[in-house]
Length: 401
Image 1: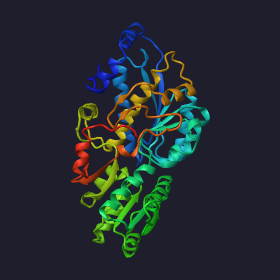
Image 2: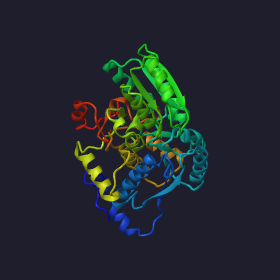
Image 3: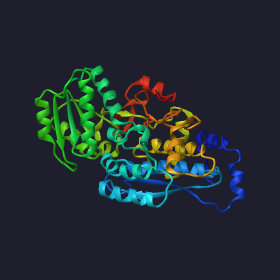
Image 4: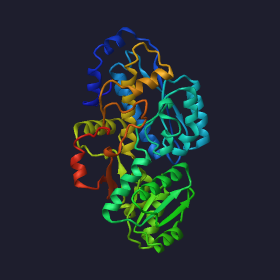
């Protein structure tokens, strides 16, 4: 028996008074099979692994108190390697193997290649990491089987642009990679700037794996940019930071959540300091829920999270799915039934990232709203709060607006 996360799993157990007794009277029962897909090897594993571990921690806690009415949850894990074609094949395997729902995807390009598989099979998919806006916009919401618990770029981009404008940094150079993530992010930033009557001072596009962006940085400086908004998930963020430092160009680097990844912080080292990014979760024990989660993760894995947002969002996702399943009392987990259960979760889940009260509906498949975001800042190799008032506000877990 594992040691349960005191606040979260024990509160969950309290909701299910008959579950442990049921488990004792049925020693052999069919598990509830849940798909899990993401980049668990390859360059994107730096946030795929924390996502997987967050789900595994939650499932272990849930099973310790009886799972679903005495039936254990069982993860069917597929590695998409961060490659769209591999993700497509692994997605087909999950659907064919009879999972009742799937949690996964970190890379927007991989997700977009695969979501049709889940939609066509009417098999719910909950995305805890990928933030590309098109992921939950491809299908009309009432018909969509694609849910998300990460902050889509359509809310991250204006959140960061608002902060830039407040600081007086209005001549923004956008550096976006050539992936689906970079393409969607570029459009979101351009729209966020346009909504404030602004245009990018300069736009650079580049392939993954690029080692030198000095010419693009020189062009951005020549264009008069006073901030760099970077949109890439890999070491290219560090390439931008190191190139800027080599040019002795003292402008801030800002962006979405990938600026909190080890690829950036460890790769850029001191050049990463003071970078600003949107965050839903910062790994500080600001309240009892977060302290319990951080403690449980550290006990189980005995190493840093790497990307705390990925772990925390995935952990909450596993609990939200389980809360939804408990409204299906007969164990008949057809896709439409699970979809309807997710759209009508009856109980409030007091999570790590947020307090989830009706996180999804038939008309809204995104659980995170802009009020849940805070601005993070890299300082001495870790991410902390950019503003003291956000640290104080973080004592209280936000709800969807």
